[in-house]
Length: 77
Image 1 (cartoon, rainbow, N blue to C red):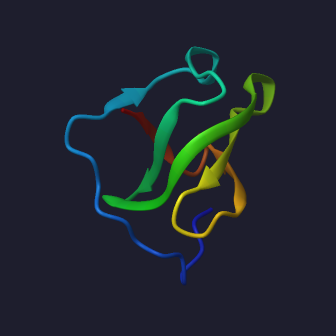
Image 2: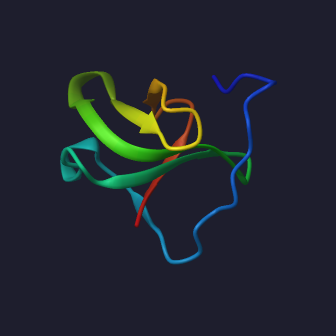
């Protein structure tokens, strides 16, 4: 679930919604959004399709963050 103190980014308007983790590859640029707010944006580091989870290297903090499709919608540039 998104944390209350998460930083907000400006969303990318030309991004396409990711319907399956299997469509993502290392190096893809994605945004993790919830409720119209972008919580994380950055490069895909790893994926776990069985867990519906992607690990993103957040471009604003440099931190590696797990984002689950149970908690976020994912958008790919």
